[in-house]
Image 1: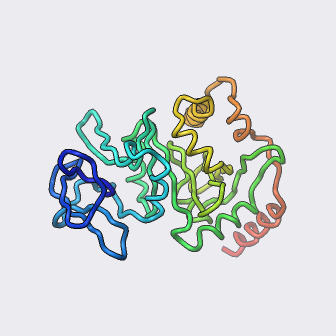
Image 2 (image 1 turned 135 degrees about the vertical axis):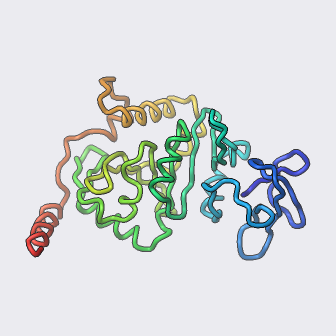
Image 3 (image 1 turned 120 degrees about the vertical axis):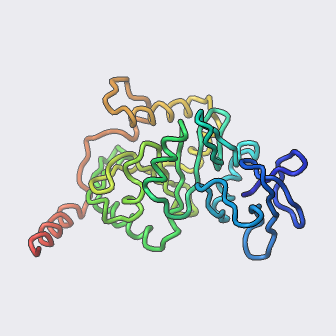
Length: 265
């Protein structure tokens, strides 16, 4: 953890400090070595939040885009269940920054636990993911005036297979650069829709809360969850959610390869 409670105040880890866990109130020890980033850990082997993962510099960099008062916020459900959100905005959005592999059942549990959840996924943890995703984009169906692309056979791209099919928006971060990739819909074993999305716009949307861009984002996310809605599309939906797609170069050849492969079995 980045923060512990020291003398009643949230504080980052410093050498020789001890504090209290904001979830279970048990003793935490400051870990301030030369290899890992400075952090807090429970004394002994206690883990009070099974959803928590060891942090990386990638986590800290993303958290640093938001006010400290939004970072590592304890969210409690009506049932009394508690978990620490990586970031929780003043407007109720929880943003989870996921580096390690996440089991599908845990992802579904988090999707259900947080009313307004968005994921940002580290796309460079596995070396193969960037190349597989580029290959998937080469097979995509899209329209020249439309940012949204439909990727067939998405199960051949591990990161799409891992993250397609949930209710919460998922943004894949493939490293330095202005663009994230938003998984807009689809199933892990079928086709998946993706679109490029500005890193700075996403940060602005979550920091802004009540701005027009933030409202459009929330309306569009709700429309993805309720595809039968007849509401007029907002500008964000108009940009990302069109369906008049055309095949990108390479798709017909790829389909023929798949047909040839199926005949061998």
